[in-house]
Picture 1: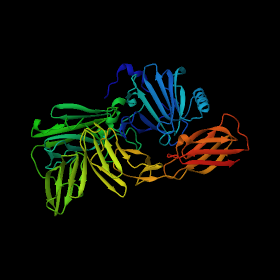
Picture 2 (picture 1 turned 120 degrees about the vertical axis):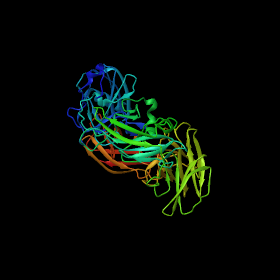
Picture 3 (picture 1 turned 180 degrees about the vertical axis):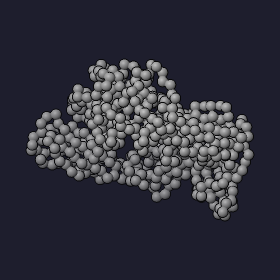
Picture 4 (picture 1 turned 135 degrees about the horizontal axis):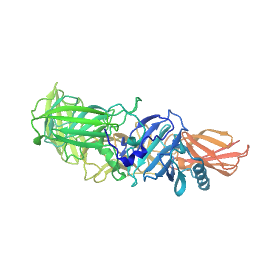
Length: 544
């Protein structure tokens, strides 16, 4: 059971909504190159639930943005803690009125406002209402931070009952150098409960685990993971707090090659979880995953120094493994290669499996070229593009298969632990050219694009302006459904006028709504202007 310090117990039994709903995302879950800084509460796909303050304090910051957190409140409590409530539909009446005045004064929906003792709050007071602003469907994002603005896990302070233990599905054993092998092969191996695995060398552990807080379908990560190897117990992962300074480390610690995230327990390949030369011939390894209520699941497997053949050799296709090993399958007994070490080759069912470890930034195997992204950084030119990774963006070598054909770049990575993204620059950029995802046709950027996963990208011109699908009026509010099929609408470019009187543009899911702080005449001309991401302009007029 987790023991809470007495000074924190004043916050026990708090719940940010007037009724218990359900948790849809947990603290420190993986997001692209960052951690999830709070927890999300589902609101049954509805908006307008009152949001309740956790203690006495004040609202010191309001942030309103088209994406991200949408409408968000930042509160300082008397205890020194900071609270964040995001994706809101509206604020407390006096705060809402103040924000609207600022928006009409600047005719900007986006706002970043700071206050000092202007908006005090008392414990259990309604300070806002849930919504669906920013990214995502209706829900409440709630954060708790310490006085230094570092996010801390709010679950241990909330009135949430959890009787369901985490569930460890499997363990991934990862060889960390060329002299390490699991069941005679230099590639990672999946281990299940009570398995015995034969190891030689040094290895990292990744734990595939999920934790259901309630009986809903949503699963999060455990609060604590610890190992017992022999008589040594180590707590190797704890989802209790993090600093924004090391927020990017989420890219390293989470492996996302299965339905649930795999959590690495080692900080770098130089710090193995399992060091076979220091262990007895046979050793039991116990992994324990624990949630914030103390519910736990235990996973035991056994390691043996005695070597034996693996039951299944590997995947039956060319593969890049998470530890940077390249597997090539061929009908030929020998393959031509350069700048790489052939660690092992085996024959099975008439096919030859070759396992290579790159020894240079550029590796040639038969007619294929592979690239090694290392902590020292990398810069590659491919056709019209420059591909660059800055120094110390990865902790281990990542092998990439990058193919360039007919103006399309296709990336396949052995792993994606990028703590800074790869930057792809169009060296032949022309006005109104864009990057796009060739699989989804989605817009990615103009002169450059940032990637951190397997993807196929290309460039094309965008000369088609946005268009207005429908425009209608409800009382003094005018709704515009607008879209752009290529690069998308620049939300900040939306402007509306009624009889030359400017209206405030508020982004909604499929366009804009326009409001005024004065009565709008029943008859007149409405003018709508906007641009797409590369500056193609739309001018639309309608008479009411």
